[in-house]
Amino acid sequence: GAMRFLVSRLVRVLVFATLFSVVAGVAVADDTEDLRSQLEDTQQLQERRASELEEVRQQAGTARERLERAEQALETAQDELAQRREDLRAARAELAEARELAEQAREELREVRERLAETEAELDLKQIQLDNRVRAAFKYGQVSFAEAFVGTRDMSDFLNSTTYVGHVMANDRDLVEAVVGLLGQVEAQRAEAQVARTTSEREAQRAAAAATEVEQATRDQRRLTDQVAQRRVAHAEALEELQQDAAAISEHLDDLGQSEDRVRSQIAEAERRAEERLAEERRRQQEAAAEAERAAERARQERERQAAESAPSPGTDSPSSGGGTTSPAPAPQPSPPPVSNNGWLRPTGGHVSSGYGYRTHPVHGGQRLHAGVDLASPSGTPIRASRDGIVSFVGWMNGYGNTVMVSHGEGMVTLYAHLSSYAVSRDAYVAQGQTVGGVGMTGTATGPHLHFEVRVNGNPQNPCIYISC
Image (tube, rainbow, N blue to C red; front, top):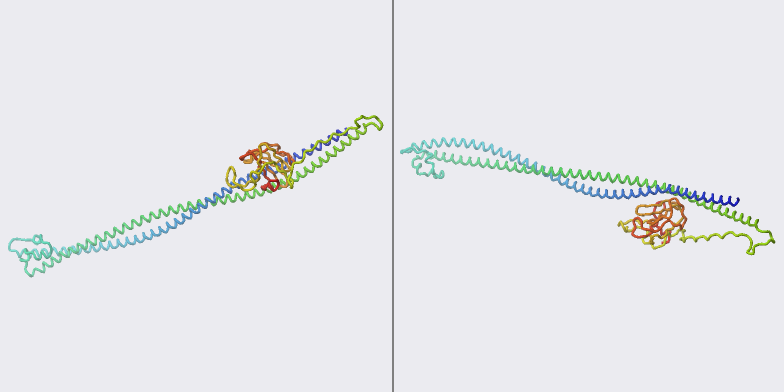
């Protein structure tokens, strides 16, 4: 009965320790996994928004250059329009002057025509007088002045004409000369009037054509200036919109940064609580182990006591092989896994195929941070936990493929990626050296290897500081 009581008590202690380990693991995982997932989403969103911000800033730079060119073009167009307007004012002034001169020429033409009419009337009178004198001088027939004048080439020819000179008395020469003078004056006035008219009309037409041309050029330049101004407004609006987008993205990035800080603070608090729970669980496990050892010792003492009571008294016969029962020898314990000087275990063998730091991504290209080390090993090679802790994540994780994450307290987490299989479950407690999975090439990988990371408060560390690389 006592033996059964001790065994029952030992079982209860071990069951309690196991249940506490599971409960502690669940609490740790629930406290941190959602926060880390939220942090990862926030960081990915930050990267996308930062990329968008850079693209918007580049577009804003291009829009600013276009706006500057548009402003220069507008300034040039406005200067050209001002020059066109100045030319138009000059052309209009010239047109007004030409029209004034044309009006003066028309006035002079009217005066010339009036004088011409007077001269022609006087000429008609003189011609009548001369004709009468000539008819009186002829004895034979009637010859008109007009008939006598026909056929003469000019006034000199008329005066020297043998038809009239012989018949005109000497005192009539003054009348003839007056007629000739009036004829010359009429011709001169007619020529003067024609020149004045032609000149005034030509200048008026030239000035009008010049004014029309300048007005058309001014309209064209005004239309061009309006178009350039509209482009300038469009570029300015595009730049303002891009600047507003950049400001909105920057504000969102600030919000994301604050959210990231809050999540990191929450993760740190959750890991602090997890560390306390882990320490408490270890203490309880140690107490449970000590209680188990004490129970085992009491059981052994009870067996020895019962053996002593059932042993024959001194002097009685005993089997030739010797008296008493012996307890079975304890099973040999496996040797602990090899660890480094600072207490860390290399998770698997194989050489380092890619170290920690920035590198050209073998699949996507471009410079990216390689947040861990790659240990090349055949597929299925066991992967061991570098330290003891609680499994906080088991599952698929983007480019990492099949992934296991183990929380070790003090904000420290190890990550094992590209696994071909799992050997642990979420919320389970794993001891250092315990197998957590097998090497594989799931996710984004070019060959079988283990991608191993060490993170402190979510920030990647160089694993070679902790394990032997």
